[in-house]
Image 1 (cartoon, helix red, strand yellow):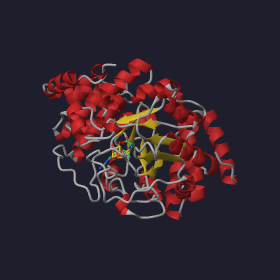
Image 2: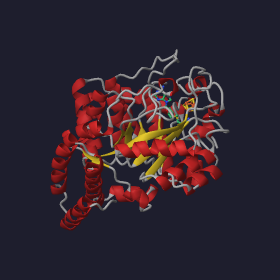
Image 3: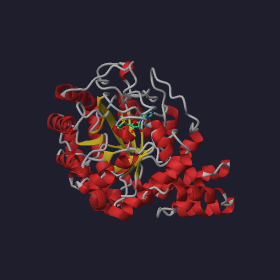
Image 4: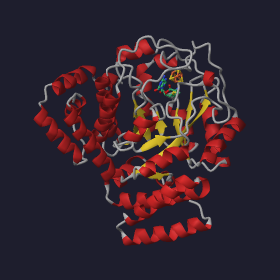
Length: 454
Ligand code: SAM
Ligand code: SF4
């Protein structure tokens, strides 16, 4: 398959140039259009990415926040990553796990160690895990990944496991599906072929096309819940953001389902490794702009924010269109029990605990959600998108968020969190307009208080 038809670099360059020429008064029209939550074109997204003017930027951020609230309500889903291995045979210049990093303490968790880590994540109150590992066909193959999934589901209270791992064959994706994967995440890192080649000098990851087509193979294997993204800072963000959107459009046209999520990893420093060529540093304002543009272009796609970003900026971003956040994260295998900097993938920035992050989310008036109901009811891919586009989802998700957050408060909340959390829950309950759903929620809340769990 000619992947130039999926990511057409010449076309992207043309769209960037066209975007530069759009006048300010048209930019306001595009922002208005974005607020209708029906999406905007790549040309329009390009124009928004070029905004420099402070007042237009604040209109853009406001619009993104409105669209987020209209579609997802005030809910923010929380999760934690679980790194099962830092062994890797690739040599991605930017990553601490690269094979040439001889200073890294290498480790692959066995099943018991994985359960031990997952249990610690559960002890913080999490219900969702993102399983992450390096690529080493002897150590982190499909057997390692599926055994880890099975062990976590069988022995802990984790209800959904998403996976961020190297691209695989259709047969392996089938096994991943059978093992009960939630979302399969894969970042193209950069869609710019020349930069990709430079950043991935050796190892299986060298192959741009094999990585780009991983999602096609996942769909073929029946996995329709997909997360994409680009590692911000490797190349011109305007190119990579537009290419990510182009990829999303392709998936929607080809498989009738766009990506379930887009992640926004931004390059972080790595212990003992220096990335020499980083001319594409992304400022905080540019980072906010990128999130807002994703939100307006793909209103129904979740946006995931990790602890790569500092606490203060994250707190601001909760208002800007982000719908899923990690909290209390470690990026080294075994990291929830052992603090080993020399085994980390990169330095995290927001080191607050889950409950500390939840407190901020609540104080801002957002509603933390530990819900995994859609996935368990098989509402994924196209079925999820259909539901997400209808009005009912709002009330339904609001109710689930209330119930799962109440569980968290009862089981894991400290005094401070319970104080702000319970107040928030009362308001959230009032916001449910459908009388039937409201009554059901009140009844279920009583059962939750008596000890019943989701
Ligand atoms: N090894 C698999 C792969 O590369 O697809 C699995 C995921 S890798 C451990 C997770 C992601 O971390 C990468 O896709 C990359 O975007 C991101 N990453 C790598 N180095 C990073 C750094 N220095 N700062 C921020 N994110 C980084
Ligand atoms: Fe390995 Fe993934 Fe890191 Fe590349 S980004 S070195 S493939 S863990």
